[in-house]
Image (cartoon, rainbow, N blue to C red; front, side, top):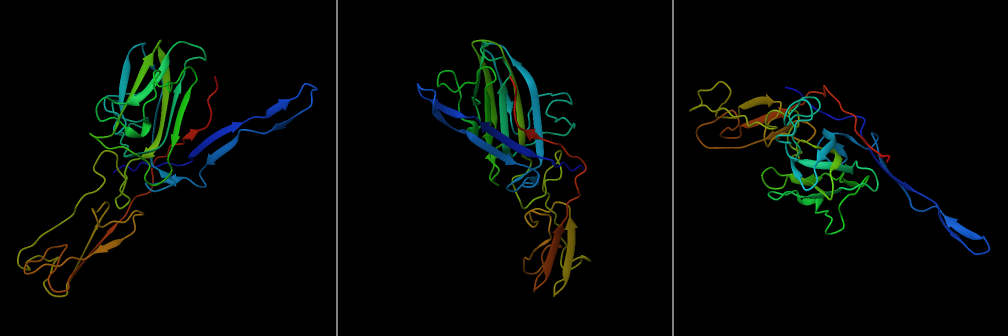
Length: 286
């Protein structure tokens, strides 16, 4: 089972300048504004599904949309979108799956002053609510070299829900548009489950049953059963640490339950990352 992870992440936003007021006699005053240097790097960001963490990345550069046309991206699994490795696959050939967006950057790659405004909206069905609507009509469309950036490092992220809240529409208004989109996100928004696979379910339930104390792994009086799973459901913790769950029932016993003070213990483990991707959101030059 493949494990995808992130390393070397950084998110940087910088605004700087010197604001000057010059009087008629050439005297004046100045101040360094704006002065923003938002920087989150590897010392803060790590691989995972909690706050200040991410474990998935995807990007597509210079996508073309003809004037008056639009395309809708499925942020959950990029269904039908091929960036080179196959439809719905990322740059490493793994299935795309975002349940939270940590950072999104969209750039209108047209030259400054060129025709063609990029409108960014919720999809017509199951639209992604976090992005809002940015159109020519409401003054929010991106013209040449315009950039939309949104970052949410909190553990809640920018939520993506399949079949409910995941469609993003990109439209060209007044001319053809070339745009790029960059995503940093999380594959699994459930911190109690493993996020180790992009091609199969992130959690599996494990159960075994026996009838009337006949199983070697269960007993009816003060006996214990121990099982382990790489992705146990509902009983694993967010950092792949072991957890325990105890349930009781009467008469028949199973591998996960026992009658009269029997206990069941499960532990989850996660293999270390076998691939890494470096993502940096910094600056774009016109």
